[in-house]
Each structure stands twice: as C-alpha cells, then as structure tokens.
Image (cartoon, rainbow, N blue to C red; front, side, top):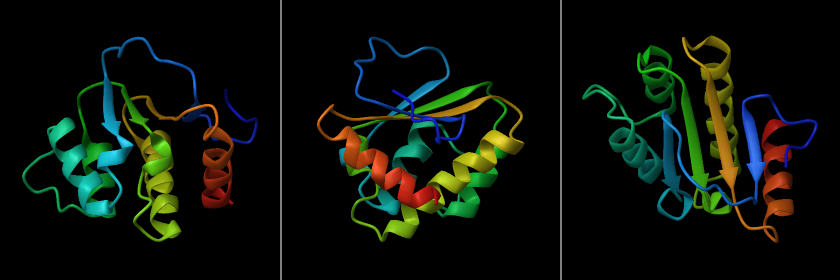
Length: 131
C-alpha cells in the first residue's frame, strides 16, 4: 500500500507480514515512543557498537558504516513510533533513513506497519514529516 509520493525506501502498510526475511529487524512502535527508547531498541536489535552515542548523528553513522548486508527496518504499530517526541523528531528519523538509503553500502528499507483504520493518519504524519 504505497502512496505514489513516498520515497523508494519507505513502505506504509496495513497488510499482515507473515515472516521476517534475512536482514529484517522488527521494532515494536509501542516500545519506541521516545528517542531514548528507539535508540535503545535499535542498539540492541542491530548490535550497534559501544561507541553508539544514542543520537541521530550517531545512528546515521552506525547505519552507514554497517557492514552486514541489506537491512529492512520494520516498525509494528508504527503510529506509536516517536509519538512522545515533537514532530520534528519523526522527520529527523525519516531523513536519517533517506541518508542511509542514498549513501549506504547496502540496500535499506523502512516498513511502517499499522492497522487499516490507522493507516490514513500514518500517511498524513509521514506526508507532514517529509514535506
């Protein structure tokens, strides 16, 4: 369920996803409502190095330097991702993802998954953040 104006690395969906393929990391949006929570989850899930500074620049550096093949970051209940932060933080996350897709060594995708009834609001949130 992609909107035509989404970047090529971003997918918004309400479809069930049966299984994770190799290179897929799943993050529960309900557990990533703040930057600190998201950084902690990604640090663990991606086995980021000790020097990971738990900020946007450090995340970008870690993802750009990552030498582990293609990465799909899937966020379940994506409508909850970073909702305890100002809207600019969600926009920053999307910018980091764009940088990783544009400049990374390996293919990168971000899949934001939610329910069908919440998908329109998630689309609006993404559109606002990428405008």
